[in-house]
Length: 261
Figure 1: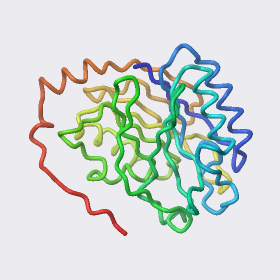
Figure 2: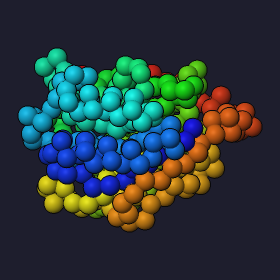
Figure 3: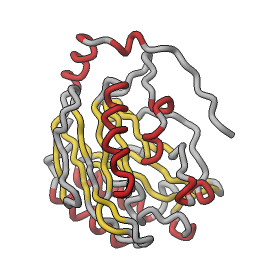
Figure 4: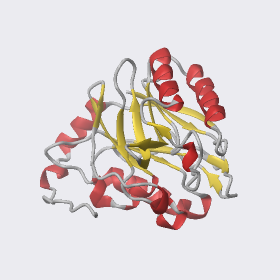
């Protein structure tokens, strides 16, 4: 599977401008990638005090634009956005695919220090998406700090862990450590996509988007503040062979998760 990592600045609180920027970037890689990944809350930035920016799921203009782009450029799109659904607001991770209904995951761990827990409702479902025979686990930013939530179920393995984020420079050292750790302990490819630039709250973001292969080799790293798109080719057959040769996943402890609330 050819996966594109899109690291770029987000225009603060301007969905129309951000949809236009994404459209340009996806048009440029049409035919070169099977799946494209954009940062967390790609259409607004990490706005946690503007409920008016939330759109209805699947029917709002941002969702409609994402589906159009997936259909037109023949690729899947992964990221997150602010949505309203049955009277609640969510930081909703998504997978839009050509010609099919979108799949979604609502961010479970909300970043209270950034005001997120007062603004959004947490999702309580651990989901695995499937696209072209590849199983994908999506996490949104702060979820990355919670290994039990992302732990593989040895009876239902996922192939790629994707983390989309607005992870600021001041804490980027944790991102650099936690993402490869989650990939290693779950015997999967690990991909993280972060934004760059300065947001409307004057927080600085230096990116560090990355893709790790089965040996934790960085196969698509970005330089500090680098803006651009990088495409990696991930072999799911190679990953599954790797799991056969080193079957630690078969020895994993059983567990259950008690969801708060």
